Image (cartoon, rainbow, N blue to C red; front, side, top):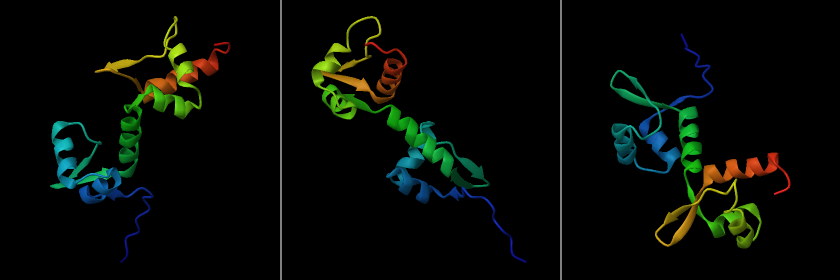
Length: 122
């Protein structure tokens, strides 16, 4: 008798998940131990990852990426001067100081851009 698997999103082994995340199995184990990695399932002693959880983890990680103002200007296709002008006023672009560098959280930059689209005239 043949058992048919109709699951379009198969569960991944730690090795497969590590490959998707571009990391090592050891690092993935550490992330799991620290509670910082993607959600996982325990099937007996075996650990498995749902591909959707890997994708969700990667999107969330991408949103936490920090960009320099030059990177942000390039991403948005505007001048650095325009980015500096958006850093003042009531609805200012949220920035963070990292040593001497001014950085912008990618997720916050996306939200800020959406707010500009919703409130034209800026």
